[in-house]
Structure formats: structure tokens, C-alpha cells
Image (tube, rainbow, N blue to C red; front, side, top):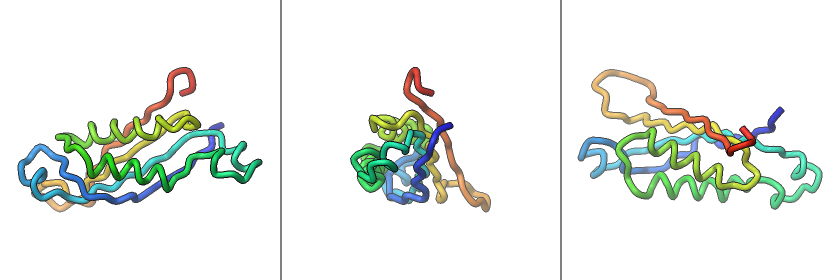
Length: 123
């Protein structure tokens, strides 16, 4: 059984999309990250150094969203998952990118892409 740390609803403005106006004007993206790891060492030590510091992780994820534009949220999700997996304690991640203002001419609630990734031999 794997423990989880969940960071949900992380919002940042990015300039991703296939249309010129998306790249020019930007829009908000929302990120949900579910990290799979063993939290027992941190629980025993009560030391943030024995777990994933979710505040610092949030900073790194926002830097990706606000950074180099990509066409697809699939690409953005992959890049964000890689950031999560760079954390040494993280065995796997389920990463969702929401694009609530996607350029769709119909009423909708959300567009999202979810990727599930893990480290070799651990997932």
C-alpha cells in the first residue's frame, strides 16, 4: 500500500495552447498532483526533511506552468509529472492539468488531462 500527498487546485497563469491568442493572452491552468511515497519515515521523525516539502514542490510546478509555452496540455502534464518524480522519495505520481478556459464554443465545466507516471522498478 502506498501513502499519498495530494496537492490540489494549484493555479497559475500560463501561455499554452495551439492558438495564437492563447499564447498571447494566456489563461489560468489548475494542477492536481497526487504523490505516492512512504510517509512513515517523516511521521516517525516529524521532520520535513524526511518527506516532500509541498510548498517547494508547488513553486517548481508553478515555474513550469508559467514557463516555456507548449501546444498541448498533455505535454504540460508530462513536464509537471517529471518535476514530481524528480523528488527522491516519490515513487509515482498522478498529475492532472485542468484548462477551465479552453477555447471551446460550447458550455462546459472543465477540460483536463491526467497522466500516471512512476519510477522504474518502483511503480
